[in-house]
Length: 337
Image (cartoon, rainbow, N blue to C red; front, side, top):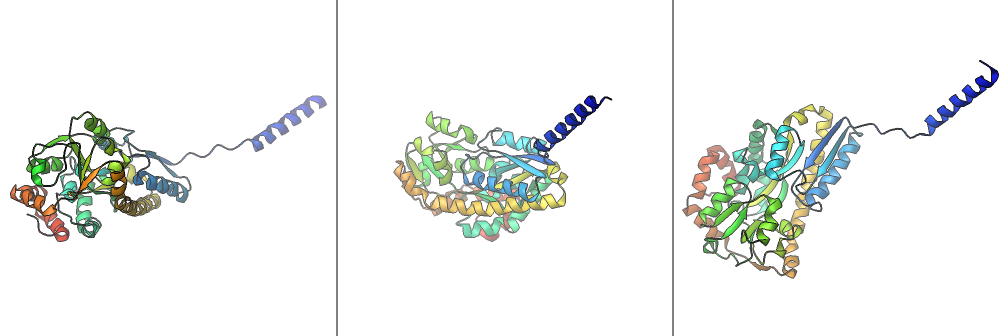
């Protein structure tokens, strides 16, 4: 090799080395890349706390696990996403126990009409023996349920036609309910006309008068702007509803124990923070919704409970859930049937 060629080679090699030093290194891909989906609007407390949780999970795992969030039914309605989490298309999913009951019947037990009188009964039950019983049933269905439920709040009835003051006001009332047998049977006991509609279609169903009313916690009524298509809000507190954080069982079991601990701890901590968010949100929402034109009334819960008992609603569901599950419910909620 000539001296000129040697100098050119050395200069070229040096330049390549310098370039290699200056070029940024490509970020290492996560060992596990998972998806989390839900039906809540992007600014709902579920998604606010989920974003915090996934950031902590990524940080504490040193980037080994990354979770991408898909809010607001981006991956389909509740029934679609439940199918996807079962097949592994989605790794994490928050779903109301009342809708999960289409797969795990006992999962709807927390939503028995007019059962839990306050959160003083709800959280001891769902963090205690009743919740543990339901999680066991979910595991048997091939999904993993985390320890702490996320709050959706007590559900209230809204209407575009008239307030619901007594059980008689529900007779013939066309009301949207989620795709769940428990909701349908409860409103049928009141002689209403329930129609099962996925949440992503609720606003349009109300707007086009396919249904007169719907029922949801105040936080959902406000965030989804249902006050634009509903005039009356009756604070019936007829059901308490919460979300189970679910994982595809196979995807969960693929995670090493140290990553499972990080994920579980952060999901559960986020659930506790979200519960407090929902409480604060609901406590201050009646005034905000009234300023949007909604008219509120407070019915007597005992009158509705008496109708359900007389119609055999509680007896029927005790038979469906079984003695053990029903006994756990009544341990916290008191006698019903």
